[in-house]
Length: 254
Image 1 (cartoon, helix red, strand yellow):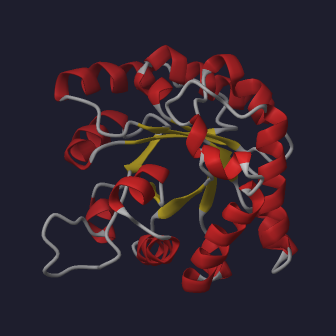
Image 2: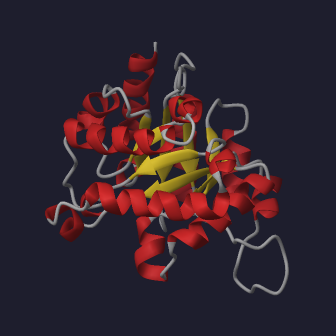
Image 3: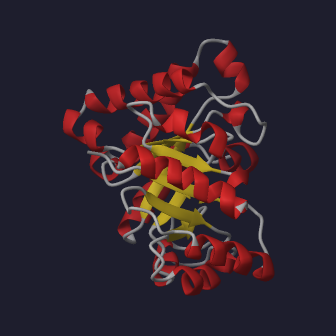
């Protein structure tokens, strides 16, 4: 059985003072059953603070990006081994904002996936379509193309050690959310594509939904058979809201 996961993506938000309040509230409110995992993905400068405040709490933490390179003359980049020194568990790769704003293609996402696994990190590999692509009826084709390009570079063995996140670009930060049925349809499609190569890997692969996940819609989304949790944006910056999303995953996992 796949364990549910709720991962909060802070994006470029936070301050030392605000983080201390948020992380303290998450750590003190984390008395769940342990059936669902929970993590926060924080900006690089706050990894040490997050490590200090969450260690021993039951929550995991990670980063929002990493370099495809292990080390070297890559000014401004952060290597997977550096993240591992802060005891990161997860790292997001291929988030739609990285794809759109920094022109990262799926081949690069595949290389970052491989770099993450080489450093012992669990990648959260993001796929998703724009509104124009959805309205053109190309959702499954776009997601399939992205997945194939990542697999061509990284291979199925490394994807099997990862988490996948379906994040429809049109639902990120817009307040619009895919319905549970819409999310399930795409999640099932991703799982079916992986199953063509290895049904066992497909059955074990966690697939999260990302796109305006809130406490009010979390349980209905997570109840879908192929939705294994959420990649949460803005709601992860509000302690009680994020805890309630985690609690929704806990209830379904118990």
